[in-house]
Image (cartoon, rainbow, N blue to C red; front, side, top):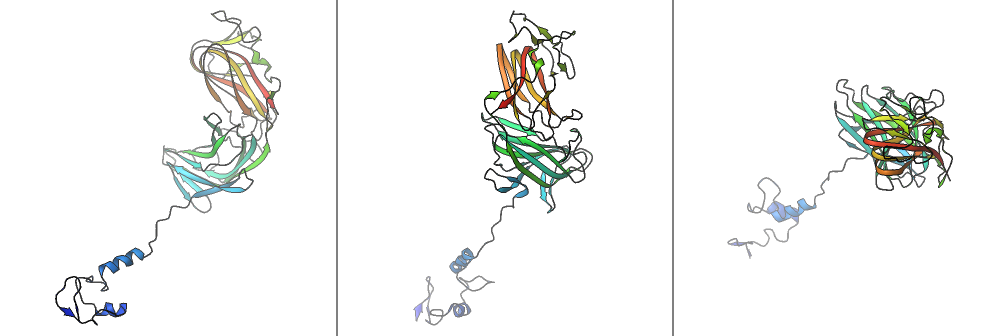
Length: 380
């Protein structure tokens, strides 16, 4: 005989629960204080151990959205993963579908791509765009000085150029473009940006395939070729008083070629320079210069005064002079009493680029003078 455990009164036979197998003990237990009323009659402590020992199916993170491949810096093909923001992304099996609400904006950013600077890359994309959907595709990076850089993909066809302002087709089609990253570029990624149309109801983009193929290295060094813009010196004056070989896209702000300004200051070089009076925004375009496809160029200018300048060059194809690539605009603020040089690297990377048309967007200003605009091939 033994006493009841846990302070119970009276004696119980030793054979009641002690020394029995678990199944026999379970069958013989009749204590309502230690058994759940509707379950197997086991002590609560044993039940707790059983619950803790039971495997639990943990929630798994969603599978990454992948579509497309690229050749990484190590020479191996790698998948491209996408992170949507402000839109719905669905892998239909056939395509990665991106959808955005009417009038809303959304993006799908790729995971970082290990692409090398100063190398040509050809990106080929098979897709279809919902009618009316606003669509832009960018290559973005962080530059050597920590500033953000970007190139918009001005899509062409794999075998011929296409008119750049035509939207991508609502039918499945394949497009291509080529780009090059500047020295020191890092944290490179692709971005697909959507803007929903308010009325059509077709605010989707289907990405069937995207391939980034690695091409040749771009020659690069410290030597510069001759200036390809002979009119960049501003020395020749037209009858209107404007520099010969230059014109304005849109409004003419009344810029004139001068030999000295109101403070009796001369040109940067030679005898003359182009002076802009205070006024509204304008865009100044220069002559057309032939370029070598797949090469890097230095685009530079000298300025003084106060104002904002965005300078770049349109990439033109051979037959009709249509724009076939991003203009690669660099924005600077001028705040200088004396001449100061501003420069940027410009790549003739577009698939069908044969010539360049440099231009300058002149922002709000109190006064601004320009001289010696140059486009020079960068030699290794």
